[in-house]
Structures are given as structure tokens and as C-alpha cells.
Amino acid sequence: MRTELKTGAALLTAILFALPLTAGAADKAGKTEGTGKTEGTMDKMENKTKETTQEAKGAVSDSWLTSKTKIALFSDDRVKGKDVRIETVNGEVFLRGKVDSDEAKTAASDIAKGVEGVKNVKNDLQVVAPAARKAVQANDKQITKAVETSFAKDAQLKKIDVRADAGVVVLSGEVPNISVSAKASEMAHRVAGVKSVKNELRVAQAKAN
Image 1: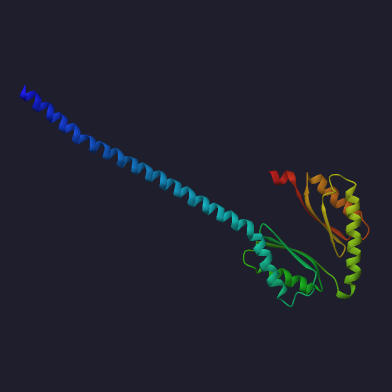
Image 2 (image 1 turned 90 degrees about the vertical axis):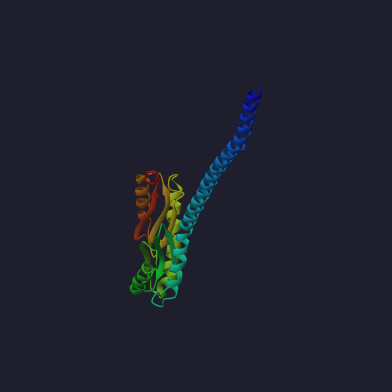
């Protein structure tokens, strides 16, 4: 009987000692697992922050390039002419407006190309002597109005943006297909006083692909 009691007491003691060890092991495992989850969450947060930063950089880069190009262009005395407009799309700089000479137009391209980060430069500047500028500007307004009036009659063309620089019509915006784009060029070219048409229209189908 005493032997059985001793054996039972020994088993009970062994069980009591084993319980804290088991609990400790489970607690340790839980902590390890919890740490893994915490580390995983931190990694995800860091990646998300990096992605957001990259998106922000992409969003402001065109604006930044436009600003840098303006600063460089307007500080160079080779660029004669006050009517110069600058726009940047996906790293490509567009130069529009009027300058006094061919030399000024060439200089504008060189300056824009020298700006760090600029991928390409499209120079649509028109060379107009200062003496003739008022007459040219008045004529451009008339041409722009005439093209817009022509486009207003067609539902597919009426939302197209129209500008005229020294008789050169620039079309921008989005159209549903290449046929509408070609139609816009054709109709603009028929307007009296238009020298040529620069078609910068985006085609929706091409954009989708």
C-alpha cells in the first residue's frame, strides 16, 4: 500500500513539473509565431511605403520637368520671344508658341534636351518676327475659332482641343479611333488660313491596348 502511495505521489510530482515546461514551450512558440506575424506586417508596410513613394515620384516628375525646363529656358537670352509654352507628358517636353528667329527655336530645343530627366523634346515653336506678331496672333484666333466651329457640328470632334500658332493648327485630346483622328486633320486643313495641322490626338483603342 505504501509502495502504491509513493508511486502515485511520484507521478503527481512529475506531472506538476511537466505542466510549466509545456506551458512555457507553448508560450515561446506563440511569441515566435507572433514575432513572425509582426515582422511580416512591418515588411508589408515598408513595401507599401516604397510603392507610394515611387507613385508620388512618377506623379510629380512631369510637373518637375516642366518647371526645370521653364527656369532653364527663360534664363537663356538666346530664346527671343515672350509667347513660349511648355508642357511635359511622360518625360517628353512639348515646346509651343512663337519665337523671334530660327536660332531661338533651335536654342530652345537644345536647352530643353539639356534638362536632366527629359526623355525627348518635341519642338512645335513657330518663328514669327516681332513686327508681324500682332497680325499673326489675330489671325490665329480667327483660325482657332473657325476650326472649333467646324468641329462643333460633329459629335466625335467637338471635344477636341484646338490651338493655332502662326497658322499651324495643333489638335490634342482623345478620339475613339484613327479614322476620327484623320477626319479631324482633314477638316482642320480645309479651314482658310491653315498652313498645316499637327495631330497630337490620342486614340482610345491604342491607349486600351
